[in-house]
Image (cartoon, rainbow, N blue to C red):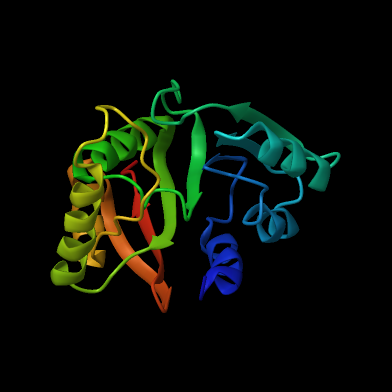
Length: 192
């Protein structure tokens, strides 16, 4: 995906200086963790992903790092209350509709300590018309499917809609930090 390689380093650069621990939702094999560990070699990282094989690969890539890996669905897991300095998510949340994404953002907001920051780097579109097209396709594909099926389909939000959902979840100072093609990095802060 255009922008991912640079997005990893941009995310690492955007993390605050005095950082002790982060939560990485949808961590996969830890591609975004490589530049983060280069900048913060002693960082405590909690990573969550659905796939055991990806978590195993992540563990193998970072021997000796303070890495706690959890197999599960971050939408369902208890992420705690005020447990992390920062939360990162890279290309993981573009499969959710507004209510689902709002619920995830509220959980991430709760998991952050006051003054903490969420860095959300994901596939986003520029216009509401593009967003509406992908949402219509999503609903068309769901017709005739069983209820509560986990459907892995891209339904990217516009940048403005993504920022609005973050604010609705309680975040302040939601900023667009960087964008290359559709790969977009947002920063959202939890007031101290």
